[in-house]
Length: 69
Image (tube, rainbow, N blue to C red; front, side):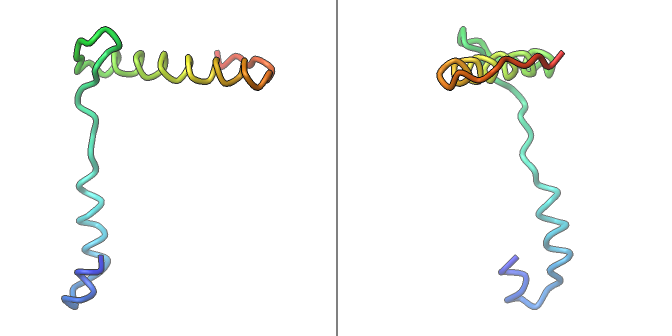
């Protein structure tokens, strides 16, 4: 953005161009060490990871349990 301003180019075009280069997760390493590229498997791994983290946090803070389903 700063480079566009210094070069007297359109900041709007620079912002739009920058937004096109978002990084997407293409694969994920499972806890057992295998790598998966399946979106469904990645969602499961991420869900399990954060569920474990929040469960341990809830237990340490003694928060009430809530069900998302």
